[in-house]
Length: 199
Image (cartoon, rainbow, N blue to C red; front, side, top):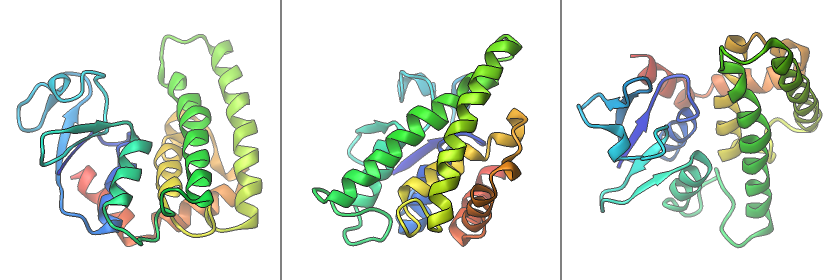
């Protein structure tokens, strides 16, 4: 398998999951500006959507969209602790969290990277994100991880919340969320993924 990634993007989530599951993979860096891969390919020929993450399988199939990728990866290792089994109520709860993170947190942060967006519009996005962070903070006051133990949703949330300093959002306003980030960052596989991406 090849994971196409760019540093400081949501592709960190499947990267963490690959390491947590102990699956063999090759990491291929993508330049988000030129859409060229480190091995010289046109990334748009791999993922016509033009963004990471993309997971190229050994059979030639390519899977995109982080929440789909991480669930696919977890299903390659039956009985792992990162995702409940398909068909269970717990798996539906996982999908609920992944969708919340994708639509409310990830999509809520994305516009704030747009230098051309009016400051007044950014205020609206920040206020909406603040309410979502309030919700996450309350959930994480009750338990250490979104589903009680470290799993796929936590890797995704961690990856997206790593953007907050670049967006001028102070996570210390949400103590349980800040403690969550510290717990995740302390995991050896998370440290290894971040070090590999920074290299």
